[in-house]
Amino acid sequence: MSKIVSNATPLIYLGKVGKLNLLECIFGEVIISPARTASEILGLTPRGTIFVLLKALKIKEITFDEFLKTLDELLKEGFRLKEEVYLEAIETAKKITQH
Image (cartoon, rainbow, N blue to C red; front, side, top):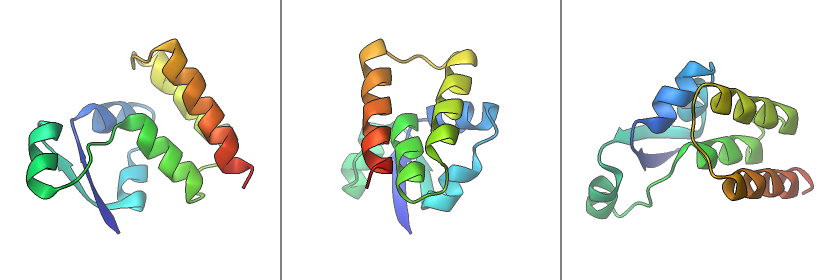
């Protein structure tokens, strides 16, 4: 399993929509810190909530429909996402599921 460096956003919002288990399923270790500082020290790339969902989709922890549902639930819980990022996430998810 790999590590992820992130701020608390994935913990907060994935917890709100009942998907906190995705972090454990995908990553053996989650490092919560000012992401840039920890990532520089550990040589890792900071990742966020959308990355976690796309990774879960790629390794088949969730389906495309669950991806869409979770994304919508996150937005209802106050997760902020630019429209172009939202659309890009959906396009990326479609590409993942077509392979």
